[in-house]
Image (cartoon, rainbow, N blue to C red; front, top):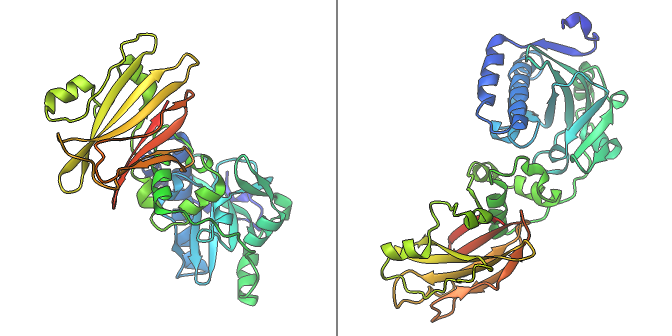
Amino acid sequence: MSSFCVPPTQLWLEVSPEVQNQSWQQSQSSVSPRSRWNVFLNQVCVSTFLPWLQAEYVPEATIDTLPITWELVNGTAINLDTKRLILIPDKSLETREFSVPQEWIDIPQWAGDYYLAVQVNPDGEWMRIWGYTTHEQLKNQGNYDSQERTYSLDATQMIEDLNVLWVVRQLYPEEQTQTGIAPLPVLSATQVENLWQRLTSPTITNPRLELPFEIWGALLNSEDWRQRFTHKPALINLRQWFQNIVADSWQTIETYLGTQPDFAFSFRQVADAAERSIQRVKEIELPNNQAVVLMLTLTAEIDGRVGIRGQLYPKERNLFLRRNISLALISASGEIVQSVQAREADNSIQLKRFKCPQNTRFSLQVVLDDFNFIEEFES
């Protein structure tokens, strides 16, 4: 494709081989094909468009999106003094509709003023901006897709000539470009921690669709979301335990007792083969060189569910649990289903036994003052 194929009102820019190579190399560190395309397209887009913008119109324009964002959401924000551009690249040759991820519309810190539809050649050799619109128009006139969580406009509703944007900014600097954004809920620190523990599981390939948008948006609206997302804890598959496939951090009772002769709790292994009950333990280090032991007892139920009991014990013989240490069951949505807290002289605490159908996700959390341990499981 050459610039002669592009309508004269649309901006067409050639992408240098250096930008193509650098963008491709940067994208290869992403895990999923979707995120690799996001990284590649956005890096090509911003590395080509921003220098042009700075040279032609706004020397002080700056990018306001870190590459980690592209792992989750397509799009790039650029600040223009008092206004904000959102570039949404796409490799599709179809330009009949412009779709914008909901995050760029309904999260206050992410929302922009102008939204640019960018077509990027799949090989990254060129890009063109085939139209733009405003936040107000997308929100008030766009079609909302609740499955994909996007706002879309027909191409006929877009302004094709990007020069119009610069003229409007010059003649009408106070132009109304944004409409009202509903406030997002305020999440507790514990709920934020629980949700990020779940979302960073390697089994979740598209975190942005995993939670109700209000909860997801509230997470991304926080200042430290990028730091939390980079931490990816492992998901523990409990059904594998029945096949004797267990993560290294969990041990059998016999193995643990062999290395910890002072371990204080009494236990009962269920011998009935029909119930197929097994027990595994994990030692958790607390502050001040103290430790507790989390024990899970699993039972294969006849209806296909897994029965689970969680218990917490002190590691040392003849010691009580620290007062106010708690053990909690957290649902996949980040809510506390049940919780138990140690009293003054408790030598163990346990959750009520619960049953999970196959592929149910949940977390167990141990909290003591500022210490917070959480592990995610799948039944």
